[in-house]
Length: 308
Image 1 (tube, rainbow, N blue to C red):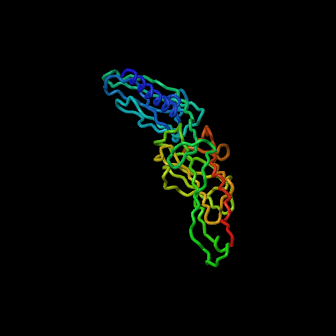
Image 2 (cartoon, rainbow, N blue to C red):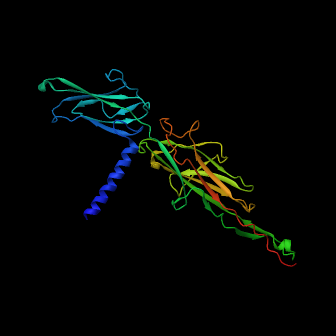
Image 3 (cartoon, rainbow, N blue to C red):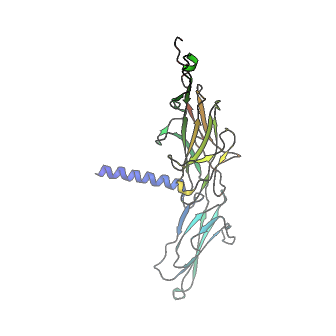
C-alpha cells in the first residue's frame, strides 16, 4: 500500500509539474494564463489594498489595457487578486504593486510592495498521425487503398470477351487522419490558429478534400486548400481543449485504379505564415512539424481473360 501511495504521489507531482511548465509561473506567466497574486493579510480588519500593474518599477506608468486584466484593483480586505495575461510584450518586465493602508483605528498608515513579472510565450504545437480509432501511428504511416467494389455489369451479353469485361468498378475513398495538439497557453481562455498546408501526389482521377474537427469522429469542417502550398488558417475555439483532427479524403471515384502510391503530407507552418494564439503571439515550437501518410499502391490486376 505504501509503495502504491508513493507511485500515485509521483504521478500527481509529474502531472502538476507539466501543467505548471505549460502555463508558466506567477513571475513568468504564459501568455493567456491566469495567475493569483496575494500578500499575507492580517486578520480581516478593514485594511484597504490598492493593486496596480505598471511598466516601471516606481509604479508610475500603467500597463496598457490589452496587456492584462486584474480581477480587482483593490478595496477593503482585498489581499489577493487574479491576473489574466492577455497580450503582454514578450521580453518586457511588468511590475505588480500593492499598497496596503490601515484603517484610522489602526493608525491609517500605508505600506508598499512590488513584484517583477516577465511573461513568456510558451505556445507550442505538435502533429502526429492517427487512425480513426485515435491510435497514434508512426511517421510515414502506410495504409492500403480502399476495397474495390463491383458496381454493375454494363455489358449487353453479346458473347464477346470485351463485352463480358464491361463492368463498372467503385474504387471508393481513402481517408487519413492527423492530430494537432496545442500547449503552453491557457486553453480554457485562449483560442489558437494553426496554419498548415496539405499536399498530395495528385494522382489523375482522384479528388482530394480535407476538413478539421475537435473530434476524431467529426463532423469535419471543410477546408479548401489541398494544393501543398496554400496555407490553411483556422481558428480553434477553447471548447476544443487544445486538440484538433485533420481528415484528408481521397475520392478515387469509378475511374481511378490507384496504381501509384499517394503520399499525403500535412505541414505546420512557421516563419512568414505562422500559427499563433488569439493575441497574435507566434508559436515558439512546432516540434515534429510535418507528418506523412502513404496510401499504398494497388495491384495492377488485369481484366479476366478467357478463350472467346
